Length: 84
Length: 408
Image (cartoon, rainbow over the protein chains, first blue to last red):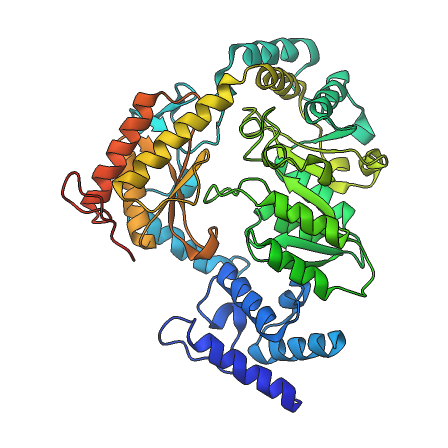
């Protein structure tokens, strides 16, 4: 994991802390669909916020491929690098 | 792990709904009494959740055309247009739809769902980019899944966000295809199509607009929000359905693009399914003729919609952003929405219960769809019952005449 990816990961975990239901603990290994306690639309809306935060578009097929916060961070890092 | 264990959460959700009342996914109408009433649990119930916007399901001319067609052409086509042939009436309806929209070509599909599924998934190929409104209908999302294009959501009804996401694609090959709807099905809000068309022109994209909830209702000639906004020439494809304003079933797409008819031999949701039965085609053709000449239908549905919308808003309910035939009441939470919906049925009113994730912003809604066939007395009764239930459930101030709304 690169430093940049680690930063993205930490930021996602921090942003999620204010969004998930009480009692849900979020870490890099948290499963996005099953572990966050958010419905599918809420997850997509959160990803849209991440797109704005990191100024990158995350296509829906990429969203479908990632399962954990760590994988999502790596996808954002790769997309940012490709765009840059 | 059983085959169905992935649906455990859905099973629990339905069990919980049933434990607290009726199953909203299995609502039974024992008999349909008219375009606005049905027998539910042995009693007449006002239908306020059917999408029968122009009340044409019992139109005498449509029924007569349907019956005649069954006698003349039989009950079904038993196959697809490309493999098993086109009936003259399929082609006639396509000409009529094209004329209605003032377009060069039209294609009809077996459902509105398939129209979106087929058109979008076929047009957007590898290396292309689909930009869809975040609050798009499931048929648009499913079309995206079927397509090989890259799919990007833009913020609901936000042309600037759309432009921003298009700018991010600068330098990348492929077509940009924007998909939006005229009126959105949950809150009844309409798209800012003038601004979206401006973005489309500026960025050189293709624009598809789904007018499922606006056909026959908005626009001088009933052509929907595109006509209302005066941007029809910017719209490359209009998609729609026969199952709402036109009171039957089926879908369509229209366009001026010269190669449009090529879609017939490459669009799988069109090619590999049976075509519309002749009776449905006859009914839709008659309904289209009626809405082309009778402007009183759209005038009445808009007047009824305004009456319901303002009545509920004045009573203190939080409603959608504008009066349209979809009038949504925002509930404070899921449990209140479920109780509200059940109590409405107890008192003879059927509306739709709309819960997350089927709703934007995780809202819990009571969704009403208004018809030109509703009488003012029916609309007033609906308002009065909803206000009474709103007070019982402490959504509204309990004192008669008070209009304070309790917020979540």
